[in-house]
Length: 204
Image (cartoon, rainbow, N blue to C red; front, side, top):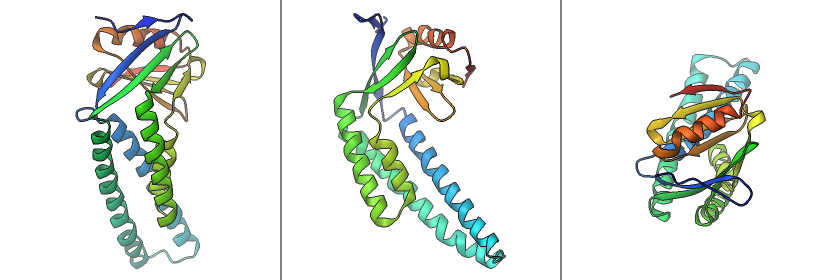
Protein backbone atom coordinates (compact mmCIF):
# COMPACT_ATOMS: atom_id res chain seq x y z
CA UNK A 1 0.00 0.00 0.00
CA UNK A 2 1.33 3.42 -0.96
CA UNK A 3 2.34 5.80 1.83
CA UNK A 4 2.61 8.81 -0.48
CA UNK A 5 0.01 11.56 -0.26
CA UNK A 6 -0.43 14.94 -1.97
CA UNK A 7 -0.60 18.06 0.22
CA UNK A 8 -2.51 21.31 -0.37
CA UNK A 9 0.39 22.68 -2.44
CA UNK A 10 0.43 19.73 -4.81
CA UNK A 11 3.62 18.23 -3.35
CA UNK A 12 4.10 14.51 -2.89
CA UNK A 13 4.68 13.84 0.79
CA UNK A 14 5.68 10.71 2.70
CA UNK A 15 7.53 9.56 5.82
CA UNK A 16 10.05 6.77 6.10
CA UNK A 17 11.10 4.96 9.27
CA UNK A 18 14.61 3.54 8.95
CA UNK A 19 15.77 0.66 11.14
CA UNK A 20 19.27 1.83 12.10
CA UNK A 21 20.28 -1.62 13.29
CA UNK A 22 19.91 -3.16 9.83
CA UNK A 23 20.41 -0.12 7.60
CA UNK A 24 23.88 1.38 8.04
CA UNK A 25 23.78 4.06 5.33
CA UNK A 26 24.05 6.97 7.78
CA UNK A 27 27.04 5.31 9.46
CA UNK A 28 28.72 4.61 6.11
CA UNK A 29 28.28 8.22 5.01
CA UNK A 30 29.91 9.57 8.19
CA UNK A 31 32.77 7.09 7.80
CA UNK A 32 33.32 8.23 4.21
CA UNK A 33 33.59 11.83 5.41
CA UNK A 34 36.12 10.89 8.11
CA UNK A 35 38.13 8.81 5.63
CA UNK A 36 38.22 11.70 3.15
CA UNK A 37 39.43 14.10 5.85
CA UNK A 38 42.21 11.78 7.01
CA UNK A 39 43.36 10.98 3.47
CA UNK A 40 43.54 14.73 2.83
CA UNK A 41 45.55 15.26 6.04
CA UNK A 42 47.92 12.42 5.11
CA UNK A 43 48.49 13.90 1.63
CA UNK A 44 49.23 17.32 3.16
CA UNK A 45 51.69 15.83 5.66
CA UNK A 46 53.42 13.79 2.96
CA UNK A 47 53.62 16.95 0.88
CA UNK A 48 55.35 18.74 3.76
CA UNK A 49 57.82 15.87 4.09
CA UNK A 50 58.60 16.06 0.37
CA UNK A 51 58.92 19.85 0.35
CA UNK A 52 61.32 19.81 3.28
CA UNK A 53 63.39 17.19 1.47
CA UNK A 54 63.07 14.74 4.35
CA UNK A 55 61.36 12.12 2.18
CA UNK A 56 62.88 8.82 3.28
CA UNK A 57 61.68 5.46 4.57
CA UNK A 58 62.38 6.32 8.22
CA UNK A 59 60.32 9.50 8.15
CA UNK A 60 57.48 7.84 6.27
CA UNK A 61 57.30 5.01 8.84
CA UNK A 62 57.33 7.57 11.67
CA UNK A 63 54.46 9.43 10.01
CA UNK A 64 52.42 6.27 9.51
CA UNK A 65 52.99 5.20 13.14
CA UNK A 66 51.32 8.45 14.21
CA UNK A 67 48.50 8.66 11.67
CA UNK A 68 47.29 5.04 11.56
CA UNK A 69 46.64 4.58 15.34
CA UNK A 70 44.79 7.92 15.45
CA UNK A 71 42.80 6.91 12.38
CA UNK A 72 41.81 3.56 13.94
CA UNK A 73 40.94 5.22 17.25
CA UNK A 74 38.61 7.71 15.54
CA UNK A 75 36.96 4.86 13.61
CA UNK A 76 36.35 3.01 16.88
CA UNK A 77 35.07 6.17 18.57
CA UNK A 78 32.72 6.81 15.64
CA UNK A 79 31.33 3.29 15.83
CA UNK A 80 30.69 3.56 19.59
CA UNK A 81 29.06 6.98 19.05
CA UNK A 82 26.87 5.50 16.32
CA UNK A 83 25.67 2.71 18.63
CA UNK A 84 24.77 5.33 21.25
CA UNK A 85 23.02 7.33 18.52
CA UNK A 86 20.92 4.28 17.61
CA UNK A 87 20.01 3.68 21.24
CA UNK A 88 19.02 7.32 21.83
CA UNK A 89 16.61 7.22 18.86
CA UNK A 90 15.12 3.88 19.85
CA UNK A 91 16.74 2.17 16.87
CA UNK A 92 14.63 4.05 14.30
CA UNK A 93 15.39 7.17 12.25
CA UNK A 94 12.26 9.07 11.17
CA UNK A 95 12.41 11.25 8.08
CA UNK A 96 9.86 13.12 5.93
CA UNK A 97 10.14 13.79 2.20
CA UNK A 98 8.48 16.51 0.14
CA UNK A 99 8.72 16.33 -3.65
CA UNK A 100 7.41 18.39 -6.55
CA UNK A 101 8.49 19.04 -10.14
CA UNK A 102 11.31 21.34 -8.98
CA UNK A 103 13.04 19.19 -6.37
CA UNK A 104 12.91 16.97 -3.32
CA UNK A 105 13.47 17.81 0.34
CA UNK A 106 14.81 15.39 2.99
CA UNK A 107 13.58 16.50 6.45
CA UNK A 108 14.56 14.67 9.66
CA UNK A 109 11.71 14.84 12.18
CA UNK A 110 12.10 17.01 15.27
CA UNK A 111 13.58 14.41 17.64
CA UNK A 112 16.24 13.49 15.08
CA UNK A 113 16.96 17.15 14.25
CA UNK A 114 17.48 18.09 17.89
CA UNK A 115 19.73 15.10 18.51
CA UNK A 116 21.76 15.88 15.38
CA UNK A 117 22.29 19.45 16.62
CA UNK A 118 23.36 18.30 20.09
CA UNK A 119 25.75 15.55 19.00
CA UNK A 120 27.16 17.77 16.24
CA UNK A 121 27.98 20.55 18.70
CA UNK A 122 29.59 18.05 21.08
CA UNK A 123 31.74 16.62 18.27
CA UNK A 124 32.77 20.10 17.17
CA UNK A 125 33.79 21.02 20.72
CA UNK A 126 35.76 17.81 21.33
CA UNK A 127 37.36 18.06 17.90
CA UNK A 128 38.44 21.65 18.52
CA UNK A 129 39.83 20.90 21.99
CA UNK A 130 41.76 17.85 20.82
CA UNK A 131 42.65 19.33 17.40
CA UNK A 132 41.06 16.27 15.83
CA UNK A 133 40.06 17.07 12.23
CA UNK A 134 38.00 13.88 11.94
CA UNK A 135 35.72 14.85 14.81
CA UNK A 136 35.56 18.44 13.56
CA UNK A 137 34.42 17.25 10.15
CA UNK A 138 31.88 14.84 11.61
CA UNK A 139 30.56 17.53 13.93
CA UNK A 140 30.11 20.01 11.10
CA UNK A 141 28.28 17.42 9.01
CA UNK A 142 25.97 16.10 11.75
CA UNK A 143 25.12 19.54 13.19
CA UNK A 144 23.84 20.69 9.79
CA UNK A 145 21.49 17.74 9.24
CA UNK A 146 18.40 19.93 9.48
CA UNK A 147 17.15 19.25 5.97
CA UNK A 148 18.62 18.64 2.54
CA UNK A 149 17.03 20.01 -0.63
CA UNK A 150 17.94 18.75 -4.10
CA UNK A 151 16.94 20.97 -7.01
CA UNK A 152 16.30 18.62 -9.92
CA UNK A 153 17.85 20.92 -12.54
CA UNK A 154 21.20 20.68 -10.72
CA UNK A 155 21.25 16.92 -10.10
CA UNK A 156 24.07 15.14 -11.99
CA UNK A 157 23.72 11.61 -10.65
CA UNK A 158 20.98 9.24 -9.48
CA UNK A 159 21.79 5.83 -8.07
CA UNK A 160 19.15 3.29 -7.07
CA UNK A 161 19.81 0.97 -4.12
CA UNK A 162 16.65 -1.13 -3.91
CA UNK A 163 18.02 -3.42 -1.20
CA UNK A 164 17.98 -0.50 1.25
CA UNK A 165 14.90 1.36 -0.16
CA UNK A 166 17.36 4.10 -1.06
CA UNK A 167 17.84 6.52 -3.97
CA UNK A 168 20.97 8.69 -4.03
CA UNK A 169 20.25 12.10 -5.55
CA UNK A 170 23.59 13.83 -6.06
CA UNK A 171 25.04 17.18 -7.10
CA UNK A 172 28.78 17.48 -7.59
CA UNK A 173 29.14 18.50 -3.91
CA UNK A 174 25.78 17.54 -2.35
CA UNK A 175 24.54 14.04 -1.59
CA UNK A 176 20.89 13.52 -0.73
CA UNK A 177 19.56 10.16 0.44
CA UNK A 178 15.92 9.56 -0.50
CA UNK A 179 14.08 6.61 1.02
CA UNK A 180 10.83 5.06 -0.15
CA UNK A 181 8.92 1.92 0.76
CA UNK A 182 8.99 -0.92 -1.81
CA UNK A 183 5.42 -0.16 -2.97
CA UNK A 184 6.42 3.46 -3.73
CA UNK A 185 10.01 2.94 -4.81
CA UNK A 186 9.53 2.75 -8.58
CA UNK A 187 7.22 5.76 -8.61
CA UNK A 188 9.70 7.92 -6.67
CA UNK A 189 12.69 6.74 -8.72
CA UNK A 190 10.94 7.30 -12.06
CA UNK A 191 9.61 10.71 -11.00
CA UNK A 192 13.05 11.91 -9.94
CA UNK A 193 14.72 10.47 -13.05
CA UNK A 194 12.15 12.08 -15.37
CA UNK A 195 12.70 15.52 -13.77
CA UNK A 196 16.53 15.48 -13.75
CA UNK A 197 17.62 16.15 -17.36
CA UNK A 198 21.35 16.32 -16.51
CA UNK A 199 21.48 13.22 -14.34
CA UNK A 200 23.16 9.91 -15.08
CA UNK A 201 20.94 7.14 -13.70
CA UNK A 202 22.45 3.89 -12.42
CA UNK A 203 21.54 1.00 -10.13
CA UNK A 204 23.67 -0.37 -7.33
